[in-house]
Image (cartoon, rainbow, N blue to C red; front, side, top):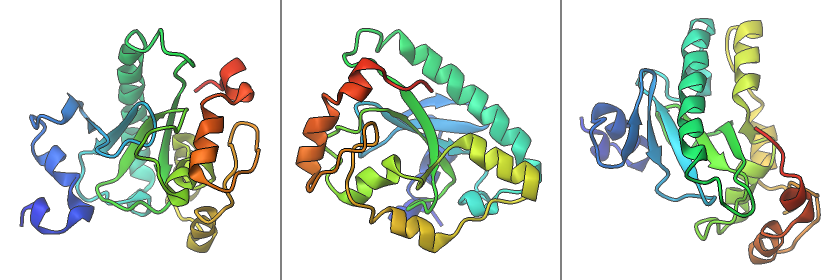
Length: 199
């Protein structure tokens, strides 16, 4: 059955099945990279794992650690290619890689996103908190869990609660009541604009 007929949760599968799709920007050995259709930052890509059996982090096992490491290398090389295109951006573009603890879509995919979180598509608290709290899990954390435990398991209630965390700048921790006020601050936060964290 075609991915498009199985619901929006499966929409990413079509890029793996058709790497020549116009929205695919890189077809790599372990993954395909597409621009996020609803970007939450100035720059937002998805690196979608080619193995359809890997629907989420819960499907990973020890034997997948090699593939995941290779994928991170491929994605890192892709980001290096982008650096010259965004070299003059103000504030400077800093890249983050991460998985959502409870993804809304399959296949397994890695978010490759700039550090600003000021996109017009970022409209709700859960959008922001999915990138600004522990809900956004680093690839190294995933690799460490695979190598130590042979799988990746998380406390679902903990991460669901993370999405409900009160809005706060994740650079300086200043609190805000609304997304518009928070985004105004993010664009000029001195902690970020003066000393942006490195990937």
